[in-house]
Image 1 (cartoon, rainbow, N blue to C red):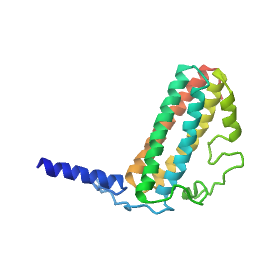
Image 2 (image 1 turned 90 degrees about the vertical axis):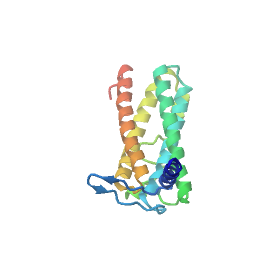
Image 3 (image 1 turned 180 degrees about the vertical axis):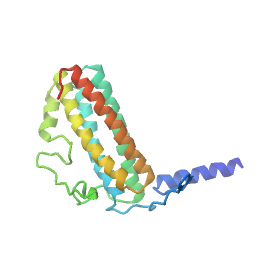
Image 4 (image 1 turned 60 degrees about the vertical axis):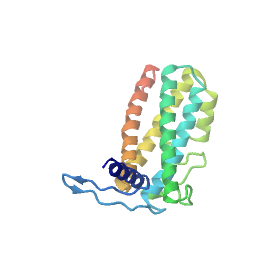
Length: 206
């Protein structure tokens, strides 16, 4: 009996990792199954690609501010953001590998949302992302000024990320990815509230 239980659990884990749905009876009926492998132009694949890029910049900004200030509050926040978003990025890229889909396509960012966003010449690939000039400023700024700049840039970054994650919650078909996207919405909104408080402590109220 134990052997059969372990095999069933292992099989369920494999199905979830591949993006399949293990339907579970619920009070209102059963959840409809999602495609085992999303198409390359699906919301699932588009979100995974775009959010992986979006997360990479958040990780970069967090490392930059870590090296620019001794402030423990900001360094702790930056570590949390970098660690969380690096892990989530790895998960999304892993899904693309499992689905056998390319990590880069010729489609412009956010096409899966129907937005057809064209990256700016300033290096901002998606809404909320920092420009090359802003990243350069963060590299060169030190102390509390670097903290304030980081908090402002990351607040805008999170707002753009929430917009995309909400798009996945609405349009993605793979349940595990929808859950990840909703978790991003909740966590990043909480961090936006925290960053607003940290800015107020530094005399910034915009």
